[in-house]
Image (tube, rainbow, N blue to C red; front, side, top):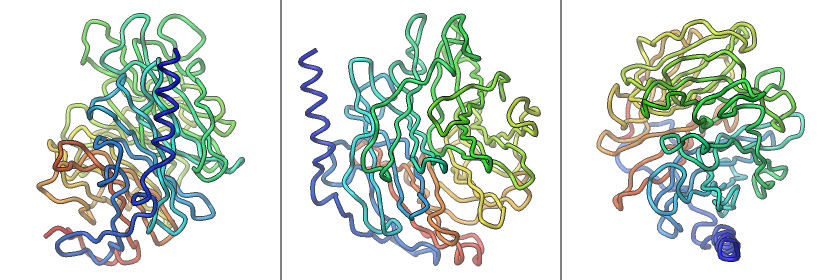
Length: 394
């Protein structure tokens, strides 16, 4: 116990006392031809002075005062998922993403395992940032008596400090019979953006594994909501999809709850819709225009009601993270910008509206040392939406 305590204190010190060179990172221009909408591009995690070269799973949110918070997994030993030693860390910007603070801890791994796959949201009632993540056992290592737990941490000062992680699993999941709506082998929370609906309800998508015999068998997706600003959470009882993966929720202009669903079989993205607040869902449909190589992307609503999606422009390969726009509430999609080059592995992405005319995008990209690092790109939407699709890397 003493050894664990000392290790935790040491890690906290490392996170809090990040190198000064990383504290205020200057904008770094992209190589090659620049898209006219790209303002700047910053390396947020796994820069030259980082503690680890293994950073994954970005999430980002903007507060009403303009503060931007960007969280991620800091994976200490490898790119591998839970239950390994993984910490969730946060950096913030108060000037629109041009410079960033030092990394501070949100959750540090302990004897129960790592904390990982953060989802970030905003509670308008309290003004708090809310971060959901999974703790303990990984999706593929779980078994009877050992499963993942869902935890939440809050920040009331714009991401500078965070509350002690609190277990909110009981209202969401139990492995055996219990009061929770969802049962199975294990669960994890979809990382990236949480959704706050117009009525203040907060949402994220829960991934569940049920088959004890088939380790990589079908996984179900459930919508999980909070009506008290992220303090307590409950799973909606109806599964949205019977064979899916990380998914995102958003409310469309007509009040429909839309879920963008990662397609485990690759090819194209899936979508499901609920018109009764998430209690029931129409059967999910495969998009004919939005690709998906079985990867996590993000979806947001633009000020004019159109939808923007970040995802790989590939049916089978994790590269070419791009932006797609929908003029018809997610029924069809058009590519408008490519953010990462063809020859670089690029996986997860997350987006935030910094202001009505400015988009912030986090992209997870490979580095030469074998790890992954996370870049922030600031995009001028007024220029982006006035130009036809092109890539800054040509």
